[in-house]
Length: 282
Image (cartoon, rainbow, N blue to C red; front, side, top):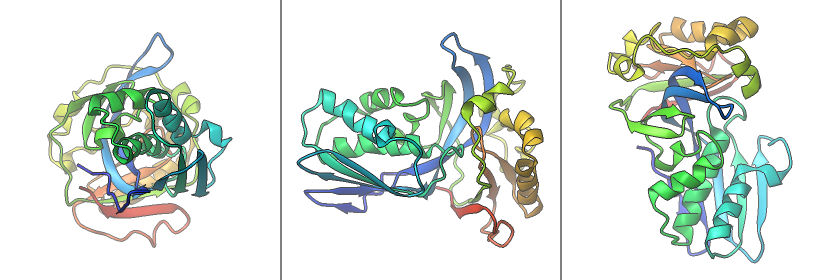
């Protein structure tokens, strides 16, 4: 389980590092009456992270640096998370400073993680004593995968991706390489090419098999329609396999690809033109 990684804690501020996640398998099983889709996936945390500092202040302020976040700051999920808790709890205004490093719209859940960590950090900073379950309920109001980052550990996720079951999967010690080609694939565009269907095999059972047996079995349904439209995605996946990945796939609705390796390997020379993150899984 990845913890909040509290790096600096004083009476006046808290600095945390909201991490990304990958989807190991992603089945789109049916369209819901509310317009969303029911999915089946294993969400797994990775350490590619933003930095989030929250400081008590006399008035609320939100600032961001690093990767430019589209839109007005009032729509930022960190701001919405603060406003949501401030409606129900009494605590001082804060200054929120977000250093954005995880690519946006990349299938990594970066914005959702920022929101969930805002909830968690406000809870810890002001001793609000919000239960884990209630934190998850708040997070669900902000986005389908926000609630995952409250526990922030490998989980089997279903319905909209906001309901969870324990999964007996650990990739501790494996090496992961994430490659983001800089494409922004809108969620609506990704789902437009999807025909929901029940999978032939149970994802939880597939994930119990050895890592090298996942290839061709543990699938992301978005790849079928997006790879022909954006050939670079399939090319990156094949390059990961060609360089020794035990398993490779696209995360979420893209456009980040990842490869999981049995041993540490440096692929920076192969993906110079893309955003790359490499590190150990926990």
